[in-house]
Image (tube, rainbow, N blue to C red; front, side, top):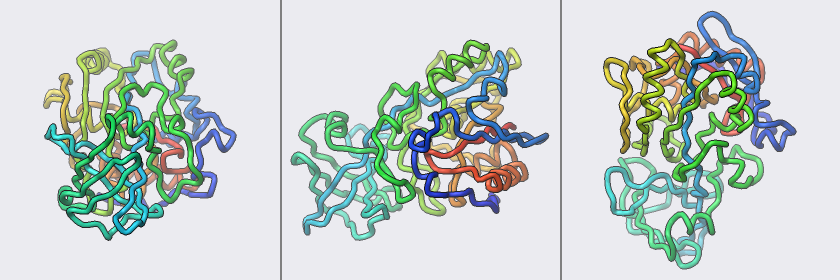
Length: 340
């Protein structure tokens, strides 16, 4: 995988939601990238860029307040980020990440007991897949979602300026709680914009892929994630392809889910469970025609997926154009519509 030479701009205003910068969600910038041209638009202009018969596939996962205050036996304070239930088991254990002052915490060890609010506890059992993440057993005084609603907050990183309520980390169509972090490519798609698209003949179909923490270190592949591609969505993808429309994935999570259930013949089948699929430049994608996505860091594994869609030359050109124009990255940044 080649790495784009350009690094996108990160002025202070990039680290706040568009609403805090005096913008509506749909007013964020949109770079339309195809082999023929690069166009600078806004997300609000998406109805002009799509055609009747196209299909947007969105990730309807809701963001959890997955960051919990935790205390070590020596009294020092940490943040415990819940990533995902341990894949392929029903034991209630979770994969977690420990951070302190916005940075990875490196002093943890197996068997350590952490105190959580309201008498809750977390025990670190073993490193997860040889990474900096941990498998943890949680003892909570109430069901997990209730406990998070009462004591958790959205996961945030050092690049973000200020603390923002959970509502700003939710997509307009999000319905099923489960993501550690917001599937942020869909954030600018307001209810009003979706209504306009539907009114112009653009279909919208949901699936669910619950995201884990995004703070992967260099060389770490994406971990298994839970997904559900329901039958109506699979059928609408197949129908769109048969009728000559385009399938546009809203976010890399949607690509991962769709590519996990598409056959060699390009036909989509409904399925749910865990996906371990990692998409790189050598993959031949069968499920989509374009991707609506944010801009990613140099070390992000998502760049390999972008190259599988648009090829390394187009991805490089796009990132250079975006950097020159001052596009913003991270969860409250700008977007790109990358065409195959």
